[in-house]
Length: 253
Image (cartoon, rainbow, N blue to C red; front, side, top):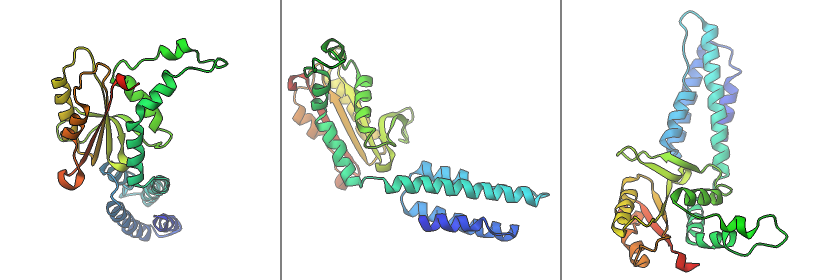
């Protein structure tokens, strides 16, 4: 990518407007091929198309040149941003293992932060800490997101999913790894059957490569967690995507 960026910068010194346009068209075509081959997301490709677009003004060569120069500069800036993200990206296998470990041991974080005794010299008192409860999936999502953000700064919350069904939003989305994390929190009015229905929708309708689902079963409605995990388990080699369930029940604490 560095070579493409340098090649783009060199175009700015071209004096002839016709030569600039021809070489910019050739360069932007190379950029699109590169981005396609690198497997960047559909959104990044669309953003790149918008940034690389220029207008030819029939009666003003100066305005046409300005438009090409702006498109060139915007594309170079965007490529620099992509390059920085790419260089700082954790390898996919490692990233998924890190997220999986965080989800699997979420109860350890919850207990250490909100249930373990506080230091008597601290300003965070037991009354303040113990008042924090996971009431629903929005609370769970907030806690999980805050854990993942320092490791994956590009992570997003409440993101629309390109799933073909419409109306679905991913709780937490790591676009770099095509990873969606859904959070579920059981409630007194929820039956296990209802939970299974919701899990089915989340597991099969998202188009992400990997789907992790964290269930905080505060009402203990899941009778057999091991069986439920196995029921919804999917593997990319056989099923085209990876699906994993992580279940936390209060009896663990």
